[in-house]
Length: 396
Image (cartoon, rainbow, N blue to C red; front, side, top):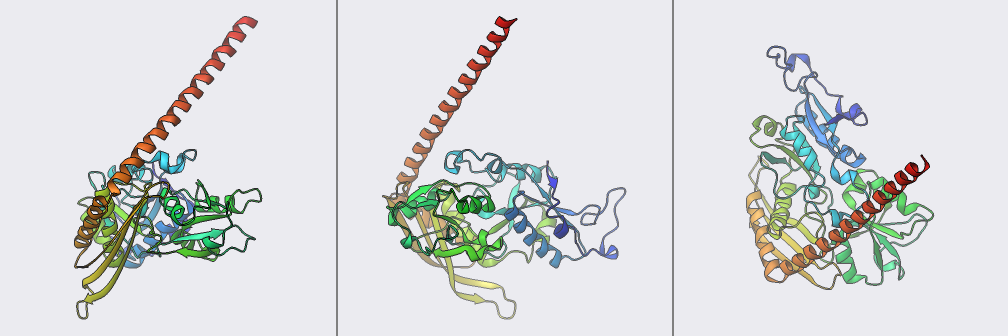
């Protein structure tokens, strides 16, 4: 059940609603978009998620000053399960399933996601309504406070680098085999606190630059990891606004919220990932750029642009790496998606499919060990309960 979020409320409820601009209610139900019946944006409850939701809310308020909008938070599995590494959780809807249920049941009107967490195939009845302007999608190095290192090359042998991403670990192992990599999960502020703790094992973390900047922590960035050596996650740095399929009213509200570079670029990346059948916890990297932009005179509408797409797949140990680059003129998000699909086919032809199959087998093997361990622990607890009951019966 979505929960109104008090943290977001000062921003979410400060709508410039003019009573004269709100259509009269039909019967006892208040008009959609009135203060009594605002449009509801669904979001995860983390600080970063709420910052992103408020960015979209602010854009909607600016475009529709006579309408009211608010934010409601929904708890998702990825936030609740803190014990397993993302690689082992591995589901394609860890961060979206519960939100999408709320959307389809009409409890919220749209969802604001980190697009990298959104599966490339949406549930039936859902559609991507807009992709706002994208933040810098690169990964960044953040060094423990008090240490003077600036780049990965500066880190001494044996330094522990924290990250929850198998893609980052796989790519980094190729160039920095002398470094150690350790899982580090949690919200952004939690991970930074883990890094800076006196007894922390971490020398540095690898984090998404976009999240650091949006949280106001851009000053912690020591250096950035750039293409072609390091490719970011598909959709990283972008937000996606998800709506109910066929909801023309909400789609109309989102006109002007989207950004063509973000939409075309992420469509290319997601098209590639869709063909590779990967999720957000596989070592697939991407990078997009646009040049030679042709606009319709006076309107600002983009007629065409040259898209450069780089895509990569890396084995978990970094020993096998496949990378391709395509350059093509595109005239729409659909054409950009086709470039991504072609890039994926080239990657598969060059061995990426085999890498992903091996990763799938490895993940399932590790999951089975986790299940066996949980079963053994459960059996042990059951035996303890039986022993305790037996002792009590004996005492009586």
